[in-house]
Image 1 (cartoon, rainbow, N blue to C red):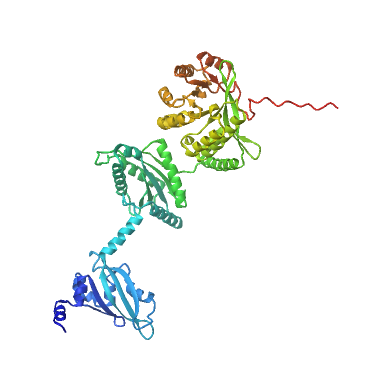
Image 2: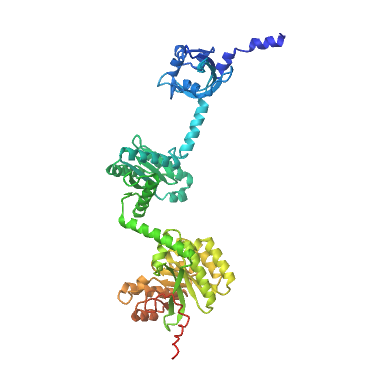
Length: 571
């Protein structure tokens, strides 16, 4: 042996000491006698466990969590030993001397050897303390299951828990409840204080809800401003009491944030399960429906889903009409009717308003009031507006002396596909845009004046005119009308139809006409029913009238002469 080798051997500690310094220990387990023999310095690895509790497999198994038989089962479950080198295995488990002691997480790696009958008779290996890795794994599990902001269950695991609880409630015939709690006006907090303050509000609301839960109840973050809550063993009366408790906890104290105190309220929608919801999807949809009802009625309120015959009937109608609209679009059964708008003095036709119609297979025709509201609710109105635009441009091209007006829905004003369609059609049909009037509702005009002004400007570049429909039903000021560059104001027929009998309506309509005239904006009075009203409107300076007196919408093209009647030849 060289001098250097001797020096190294003198300073090199025993292998058992090296293992112990790394939180590891070697062992040999004689399974037949159940004796465990450990490497030296074991007390460094298990300082709180008496040596006698580590002396046998049975004693050691009493320290193991969560399953005491994990070591023996690992040997049976691993592949049988095929050689003298033994069969490898690897397991993880927790160890602690008492229930009050902290858990030590162990990774055990070893080999077992078979006897003549092929069963394990001896095992040997190394155990290693692995608390940090276990903590990391637990953290990853928590991150995969929990919302990072609030620490509550994320949406995926909330829904999974809801499904399990509903299944359990059905099996054992118990009562539960699912609540959706929505923070009111969170977007305003974002705008006023910033997202960090809004996040602080969300976290505080989660904490206040959590503090008032019973054991076994499940809370999770459903979406940005909504929490889902499953209340086990909960009757309808219990649900009402619990909801008020949560609402009070959220609203009664301001939320302290770095930007100052913020006052917060929440609304709740709930459904009894499994009585009114026998699946997670059904519970979520009905709780959502109740929450929307709460918010529309009053912020900070609570509502419970209950069966509603009228609502269910309306939904069946919606489904039927949706299918009919899509089918009619595919079959080209969306058509138009034309309602004349005439000069108030000479009664000459100024333009025609195009109203959507839908021909059904049975020959009946659905009118705009039957189609448009359902199409808007169900997101089909864009498709309808696209088709009507094509029809209107085709009419303008076929009849070069006719002016037509086209109604579009609020969603369509911001639809880039609609813009692509109209630009393409205007280039393909020069001159059509100059005879087109686009009608938008007053509610669109007041939502975002700047966005609507861009919409108006682009249409005017084609030579088209803009009309505000149903004017007077909202709160658009004439200042906004000037800013938008509106050409025509159509006065809401609800005010026009009674001007001969109701002084307030008469004063309102006369004032609108006078203001519009001063701003060089043309006026159209809708729903004109009789000559008395028509005369008053004419005398006040109204430019155009339309309604029953003039003629209602017809699928016939009024600007075309009626087809001549051909008499049969005399015999």
